[in-house]
Image (cartoon, rainbow, N blue to C red; front, side, top):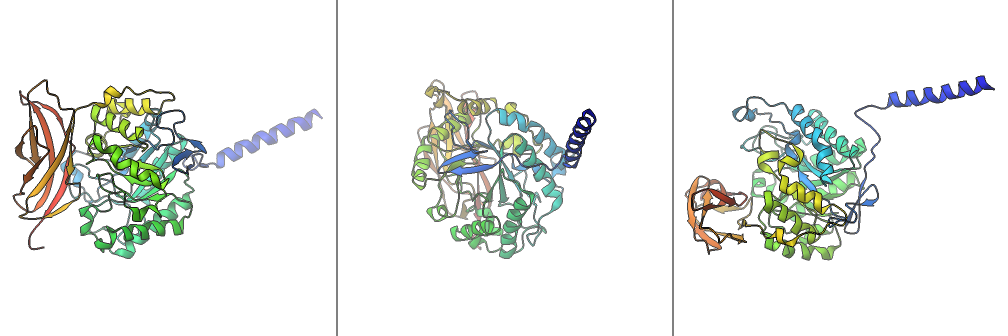
Length: 450
């Protein structure tokens, strides 16, 4: 009897060893499942951030260039060396810290985001819409690491600047195939912690250089692409994102599983106005891009959560512009302290901290296109202006400074020529030191001949 007992134990131990050795260290059974119940997000069947102000919301960070590459080697003018795999691994190493700080999801893109210079060739797609395995390998590593830590991935397909190069998507059919192939890849890999964003800021003027651009930037085009993804992978949660004005068109609501908005060009005082009308649809509301930083960014996070929308942090100067840095809390201590606080059960917000000096260009929005020769009305919000010191406001149009009156909320500005313009409002003290400034807005002024 004792011999039989020993043999039985040995067989059990051996079977455990064999089954463990067959499990690939890179591929494991997915543990993290993201789902939606009404207007609430669930992870592994449990509401996100339970008992906290952010309960049921998806708190996220835009890390689109964590899987960056530049096939045109434009990075060589910016840094001495760049290794895509090393860059991805650096981000992966810090995923546990970001999650510990209250981050539920990371935005990763198959075409990245602006890396701080124009012309990067950064795409996971071939011109016909097929997927590139070398790019997907990095994306898969991020997804699997997030999975280990009960975090979700908002996987974005298209970024407006990926045009006018030899690897750009070639036609409408290629764009549709790119979405289908992405949805099929997610299904085949068995990823259950991934939701899909069709296009980053789908009405952006940058898409005008894409094939069939009128279709692509239309609500009808986005509906067709969302349906294409769902046809391949019916269980995949899908949406698309609008511009920084925080609005989401009603035409998209019936197809989108969740409502993706951006707040880059939204003043803090307008968050409620943008979020509250969307609640009637009974679907989760997620901001997955807001480039406010520091104390202003912390206040933006709080305003978003208090009005019922998950918030997405874009620290473009740290995480998205080369050389990319991923250092967890030290990326922005004020913002990540608020991430942690608002996801902590029982946390009570001190409303006084919301009164942060803030200046925001509310019009035009990123991606707006204007005709050469026409004056533009620049509108901005200036909250909680510090009146204890003398300050000066300046509109920066690329490198040109245009003085503003402190009590004004708009000005007329006429671009000097056609081209791309980055607009920013800077607030200086009387010594000429920067006190605070708005996030940049990128617009295009097209020639009269077009």
